Structures are given as structure tokens and as C-alpha cells.
Length: 445
Image (tube, rainbow, N blue to C red; front, side):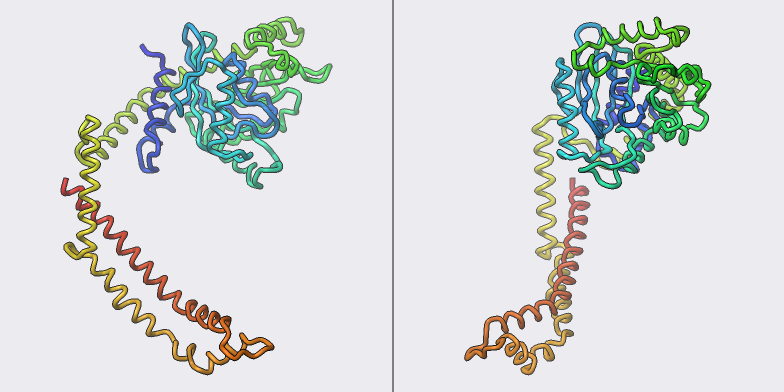
């Protein structure tokens, strides 16, 4: 049987590739029903390092402030042989993971511009490697408490709203990442996950930076579920230090160092078997698969309903266009020609509707202009006053240009209202004729 996670990945890709579906389409409902894992954490919580440890590769952009500015849907596939990555927005295959990092940054800039703004439009990345487990993770922008230079005042609320849009879904598994060297009571990830999942039934707690805690302190109470209990055991990880990153210590070596840390630590050795990024990946993969299994009946029912809805929509649209490229092009050109001819016939009076445009200019606009008080505005007394005022302190032998200009401008302001009303009326008529022409074109096929 095909791996369930890979199957869900295919369904997610299908929804993504169809794209631009309306709010009333069945596809958004199907997408929301698919189980997923959303990674949530505050800025500098170590969230990105956790993801890189699970993947075993450096591939995420780094820097200060909000680095992740778009959701990243990360689909991992266990596959023997060489490691490579593919994005949904390009056909290029990446074997250099530094190029993957650059492409994430570039694709973010294409959507948001070279600013610090965020976007809800996801980036889809698939990684194939013998060092990963089948898993789908959604990396979300880090929660923050203040906006920095170059960000809108609403950035704090915008990020929180984006995160909530994912984790509020009942089929979303929450991976709440918190640093051990900060008070858990102030953890952004725990605060927001507690609000949407108060019983901790779909939240996995991940504790980072355990090795950076003050001397004489430890995280045993948290990892044993005594400080904050979740349905699933807390998992501690030790990410690479900045010195390791600067020395380009690879992820495989970093995983080995992480295992050694927990195994040899007097505080955590009794928990070592369920600690570390490698264990985290396996636990999440197993849990995601079990959730998918439990949702299979409802997913199957929803997929069947989606198929019926889409087939109904297809039948409403009309018969399929010829499958060959030439046939498609000919059909499109024929539709355009038919529409052009029908629309022209409406305007020329061969079909009804075009005469309404004439009526606007022959009846509506002249009637509106006649109602204006031109006699008062263009009275000799008013004209003389405008010209005299334009003289300034020196009288002119010939009426000054400025006087005429003021007279013309005041008159144009007067007729602006009726003119705009006429334009709006013609626009409405033409819009209605376009819709009629489209309907008549479809019927004529």
C-alpha cells in the first residue's frame, strides 16, 4: 500500500496545482480536511534550526528579525540515493541546498517585494533524501511582540492571524517550539497553542536551547510533563551552536553530538531515548500517519463529494475542448471571433441593446445639461466680475487670459456631474452587453 503521508502530499499538491479556486469551490474544504503539522514559535526560539535538524540539511534563510515571511509547506520523502529538492513554482531540481535557501528568499521577495512585509501565500518545497522520514511540516513566520523599522504597525497581529488560520483547524497538529533558557510562562508558542488546543490533545511540545540554560538549572520538570502537561511527551533538542554553523558542521555530525549530549548528561540521560531531532522526526511521522488512518473514511467521503461537485461544475461549463493543441487554439479563436461579431451586432443595432448608448447622449445628457443654471453663471455681470478680478492691480486693454481660464474652469466643474453620470450609464450598458454576448456566444457553440 502506498505510504499514507505520501498520498496526502499528492492530494495537497493536486489542490495546489489546480490553484485560484473560488471560495465556494470544494477544493478549500478538501485542503482544510487534510491532516498537517504546523510549526509554531516565537522569533529566535530555534524553530528554523529544529526543521533543519529534522531534514539534516542547511536550507532555510537566516538573519535577524522576521526571516520566515511566507508559510513554507515542507514535504519530506524518504528515498534512497542522492538528495535533492523541488519547488512547486519551478521545474528546476536542486541538489545544492544553499541554492534552495536562496530560492526561498528570492521567491519570498517576488511575492512581498524587497521589504519586511509578510504574505499568506505558501511556498511548496519537496525534499527527497535517505536521511529523512516521510513527513509534511508547515513552517510559519515567528510570532513577535513588536514591529521593527520597515514593518507595518499591524505586523504583530497579521502574523498571529496567519498562524491561527492554520492551527485552529481541527486536523492540524501543532508543533510548539519554545526555548529552554526562557520562562515557559512567556512562551509565544505555548500561549497560542493553549488558546486553540486547551487540552493539549493535538500539540507536541519541543524544547530547544537546553544546553544554553544557566548553570545549576535544568529542564527536567518540563520534559517530564510536570511544569506544563501535554497529551504527548515533551521532546528536547540541542541545535547546532553559532560556532558550529560558522565552522560548517554538517547535520549528521550535529545529530551525533546531540545524542551524545543527552546520553552523557546526568540530568537527561534517563530521558535520552525520547530526546533529539531524529526522534522528533520519527514520532511526528508515526503520529501523522495514525491521524491520517483515522481520517481515511471522512477523507474518502469528502474526495468522492469533491469529484461529484467538480464534475457538476464541468458539465455546467460545457463540452470539453479538443485535446490536440491545434484544435484548442482553433476553438479559442473561434470563440473570440463569435464574441466579437455578436458584441459588434449589439452596438450596431442588429441585436438589441446598442440603442441605449445613443439614448444616453441624445436624451439623458442633454436633459441634465439643460437643468444647469448656465444663464446665471454666464450672465454678463458674472463674466465682467471674473475678468475684472483677473486684472489684478493693473487694468488691461484686452481681457486677460486668466479671466477666460477661470470662466472655463468654473463651467467645467458645473458640467462634471452630468458628464460622469453619462459615462457611468454607458459603462453599465456596455458591461451588460458583454455579459449578453458571452451567453449568446456559449449558446452558439
